[in-house]
Image (spheres, rainbow, N blue to C red):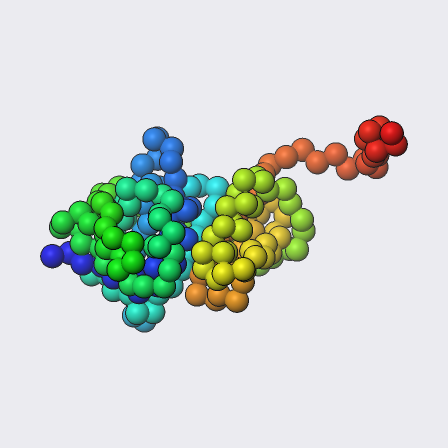
Length: 193
């Protein structure tokens, strides 16, 4: 039996929101779970524009695996604190409050996510996809009721996203590559009407 345990289901539910949907990159369609060096597990998911990374000190994983849940947006009950067990041999994920869901292992190679985690921050503001900002708010609320995401700006480089008081996880958000008009802005004519 190939059994994985995520003791903080909110971490898995949050990570699942960051999985990719592009058919050309199926290796991004799941949550990558790997044993952490000092014990516990790391959970990582990305769609290529944003990334979630979390640490579950009590979680268990016999080996690195890309877990593909049948739905990226898990039922609300899966965000409540409770352990999730993932039995890859049976193809099932179980949550005590939310029943079961299909899951499978993907043999694709998960990208080296450490390359996009910034080590320094400029504080320079950037433009971000508005729907990603909304998703970050949803994820912050899954992780800590009422929490808001905090974006640590980094100019045209990857920005760090913190979720309320949680320090066992973070997000990475890639800025939009937009042309920025540096001339003096003017109010639209509608503002004078």
